[in-house]
Length: 152
Image 1 (cartoon, helix red, strand yellow):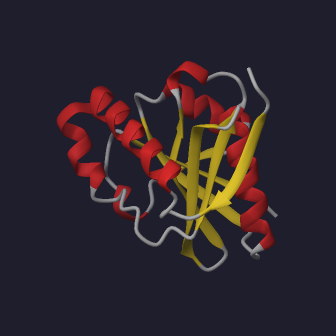
Image 2: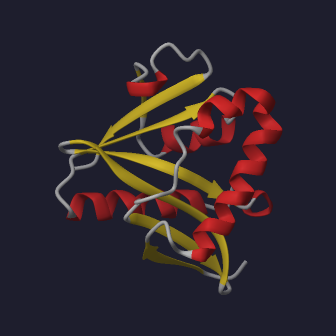
């Protein structure tokens, strides 16, 4: 595999938008009609902090963060092409997002994933995230798994 390069960008980036289409297809395949509920929380407008990963110049992964509350960012739209999962790309994206958030003065990172995304849960735990009570829109949503990590 070619070396991985990362680009800081925003949610208007066409490579990010194309990767999110692939993410949405993956989520629809996993969750079917349940995914419609989550789609309302996955708006792409105004995500100022996005990272796109490239392998040999080809976009292969992405994620972004938004401010959730003072001092805390929420990781959004994490995705790596399924043919390249397990190669450390998501970890690199997540580390870059955490570094960027720290540079901007944030101390905590939170995220939501769901119970059929076992590889994502393992990744987040490997990167130091711990399962926490569901927050915000995910309170009471049984398939949601919310996680938290201090980043500073």
